Length: 383
Image 1 (cartoon, rainbow, N blue to C red):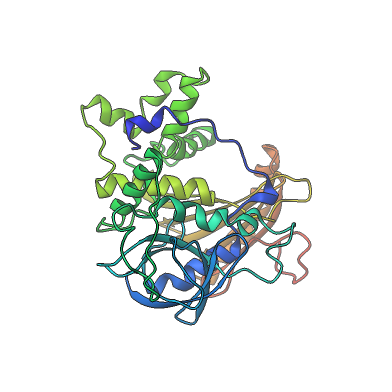
Image 2 (image 1 turned 45 degrees about the horizontal axis):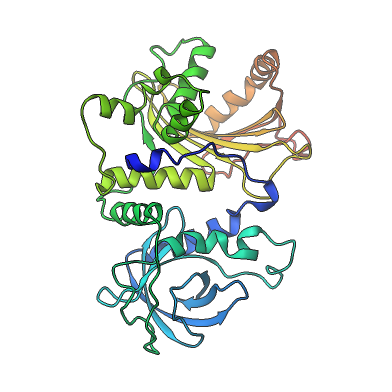
């Protein structure tokens, strides 16, 4: 939970223009590429300074774009330690005893990323330097980190920036990485629950998870949400039980870090029981920059992992484009995949009855790559 003095500053979040989104597939691929370096001290070389003040740094045969603390010089060597991957790869600049601060990193820009049509994050360095500037550590800004011995200059941080810096630092101390909201109770009471009740349970799994609590508080302050609607969220329940939130507690800090990641990456994850005895893992993601449909509507991807007594383990990928649904299933064996394909007409009819046409379907054994198939696929597998 965010500190009490920050809640009053929360305002309604307006969607960003699609052309200005900062997160893109290159950023996600970069995070995966550097993941093996987590927790390791590495050597970096500052190769160039860009027009927006960010730097190109080479380490472990990888080039990255980073917002370094003041005093960085082209050609200098700099010790780096990868301390976190979410919401973006974050490095400690300097050694444990000579740290000057922290810096976020992203993929090195392509040749045309300073052009007017480039994403906002590349033109202004906002996506990569925003948290880096906030996290310029007040604890060691006077230390010597760069090979040239240049002293880092003092940086004044706002109370909000100091609070966020402390929270993200505390999140790194958690013993386990919090990657998903965990449900405390089944979403519905029985497997034969009405579809409307199941939909309401799925909606509530995220809506009442606490991930959006501060936004809900802001809506209540503006008169657009009733106070009673906040009662079921974990932050409100903890307050009613007399618990006082501590942002420096690693578990609380990790939850806040997940809130920030959800806002920045448009991706959520939940795990729990769909109904008693039926475990489920559920990921939801809004497609990244450039992934809008032809009519400008957002494209949503969802993934479910379920295990049934008769069908075995299923991995379901759903893609909603312009109100039409594409479905891909990975099954444990070919027989189960064939059975699911056999009942596609029944599924299509059920979806049509609620106004959601089936735009594509595919079911294959898990050994084969599976993805939602489109109606215009011509390999003959679509039924």
